[in-house]
Length: 86
Figure 1 (cartoon, rainbow, N blue to C red):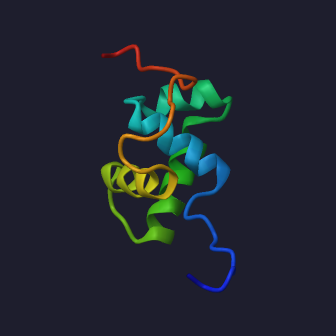
Figure 2 (figure 1 turned 135 degrees about the vertical axis):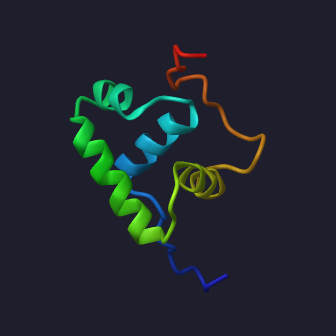
């Protein structure tokens, strides 16, 4: 522990929204529609995230997001939309 020093989150609020939807199986086009942003904006958020975290895939982003946001098996995602492509 760093004597009460705050640790910056790995993800911004928007990055977290995008990665959460990726984790649920949504594609960029679907994410863009759900968040009211362009598909290109989704890609830009992901590209910057990849660069900042030095990762190269959606799977790596999801793995880091899960580690940063909730321990395995903990948390309620019932309020998040489900993919219709399942």
